Picture 1 (tube, rainbow, N blue to C red):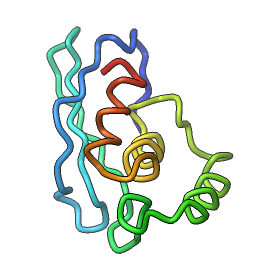
Picture 2 (picture 1 turned 90 degrees about the vertical axis):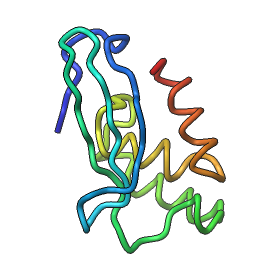
Picture 3 (picture 1 turned 180 degrees about the vertical axis):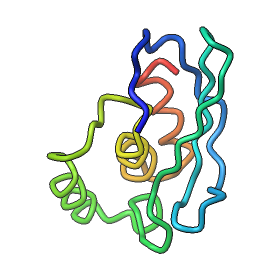
Picture 4 (picture 1 turned 180 degrees about the horizontal axis):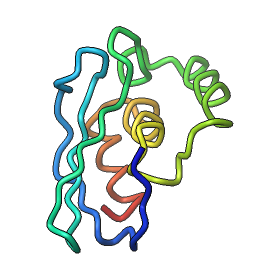
Length: 106
């Protein structure tokens, strides 16, 4: 897991693409502007549904209850935050990515 040790403003979300890992849905590519390095974080379990697919508010509430205790949703460079704010936030991936960038100033 990657933790932010510098100011969050140093990170920029460059893109979110289908994951190269068979067990994950997406890879988020971040760029560290202070060190000129790229960080790739895989998130979302492949083979499982999410809010952008089923659009069921009750399932979304249950997901958030199940995962809220053990995941850091305030650190955008964690798989848990990416899943919460990209897959379980808005009705579409596009809307969720826009909200994620705005929420974390990325």
